Length: 302
Image 1 (spheres, rainbow, N blue to C red):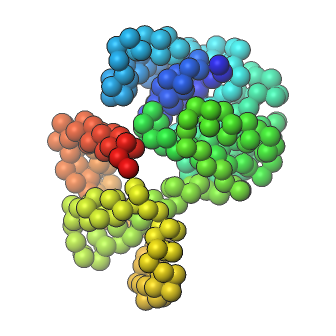
Image 2 (image 1 turned 90 degrees about the horizontal axis):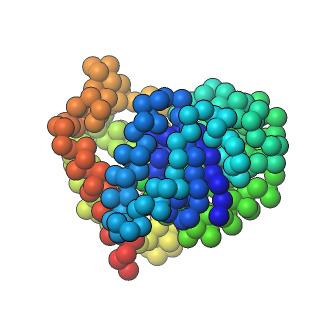
């Protein structure tokens, strides 16, 4: 049984805490925002409800998750610390600097960054050898995949220990050979998002059509057969011919007018009630439930 400290109790932080506690580990969660800490128990309970956990199992899991009022309180007696603060390089570096003053030099530190270079995140640390990228997917208590990656100065022993612990929890653990911004999953995901935005900007279709195509075709295929296996399955010669023909027409954009236009008008998506789509109040909860139920279906189906 491992005692974890988590810095950041928001969307990912509380979800990772649930995943760890369900695996039998103790978790202390700290967040600089008192409101986030105050709502931690409620959000943990909601996550466990979505997990369809039997009532008898809820109490032991929630008992393993505690809120820490200060960073120092969180750091007492921890075996591993995981940071899940916002994806801003300066914020992560400041948090890690403050953390290192409160934990022994040999305590592993996991970063849940999904976008930033781990090597850059580690800059300024006194002991960068102990920082490991451990990227969980949302919701962490449902999606089994965890991507593990080293920074340029990471001691590979810490990487191996992270993989061993996650494997022991029954996670689907993948290990990257080197540090790369976005890991694997987000690089694939946002390459697709960029092309989807390009189709909108070229007035090929509307946002609903893009989502329909994904959900009724690629989404069904990729849960069973990945792009590398599919390339072999249809033949590398055909795969190359398609790419040679299609690649010149794909987006290589680094600016995104299809996002800038709604953002400039104050439309941020679900949180503001509209974005690329309209978001009446009940839609957010409906999408969250549909997402989690769909993931669970894919996990149990052959």
